[in-house]
Length: 370
Ligand code: SF4
Ligand code: SF4
Image 1 (cartoon, rainbow, N blue to C red):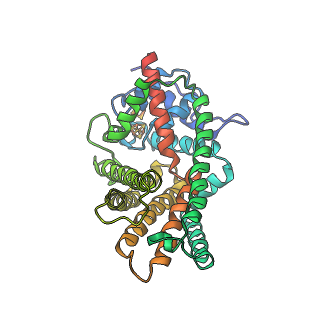
Image 2 (tube, rainbow, N blue to C red):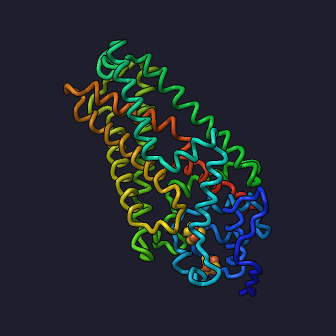
Image 3 (cartoon, rainbow, N blue to C red):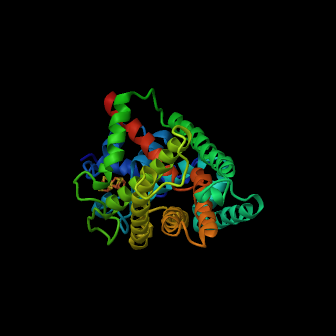
């Protein structure tokens, strides 16, 4: 182990520099000398490849971290030690800063991370009310859901609500990629990073026992499983919508579809998985120690999880009561939550998936470069 030299334990911040980045730099200077957590996750091996600890390198390390907290419970330099290390919280603060600084407009991202639950609820209800009012004005032009909200109105609302937020995320990601020194992406980088995402192997940690997210330092795979349920549930719902689009436009088979059709089977299984995953993540969030994350964004993260739960639960209610008297209200509520989800993508925790993928790709590049 190298000798640890920490001249000033109070993080000194030059004017115009980020307090969060400076604090992460201070903590990683200690970690770089200690190296006890080398095998815990991909952050520490990456840290030891990045001796300069430039701002971009710290941003990359922050997005590699998945807040499993193993390093904190293992660390001999946490408070009350004078070094007062709290690596999970320091990296969570840098991550939040990266996401907010790369969002457009930044103030909306800051607002959502602070008051996400309220913003998600108001946006969902406002869209639901608009859609409900639009039903009365326009009248349907088809059967099934299209008898309530005309097909053209659905397309006019959802196409920009889907594409514009993704463009906004792509612009922010490009800025992030430049700041972390990313280079040309090859298929090999992509394949390795997608493999890590699809199995979420990082959430099993280097030792394979899972995260220390709930119940303090007890290892558990619950967080990984709920994350997988959420991700695959979301992807199945997305696949259901895509299958419906292909049936409608390519095969001239418009909705409604029966229970054993591809869109319905994908949507039903996706909705159930998404409900289970989001409820599980919300529960774990109430159990986890808030001091080991960016506390100021707890509400925003919970708001995002509850918004995803609202999307899936209202979707399942629609399946169950598609022929009931409440169809117009249920459809407005479901479409309102879906619209709110898409519109808020660049400002919500949803961006963590994009940044994490970018960080994993960059990590593969750096491993290849040695
Ligand atoms: S978190 Fe603590 S134990 Fe782990 S490498 Fe850093 S200083 Fe060492
Ligand atoms: S919280 Fe987990 S993922 Fe993040 S640096 Fe510590 S051990 Fe690694």
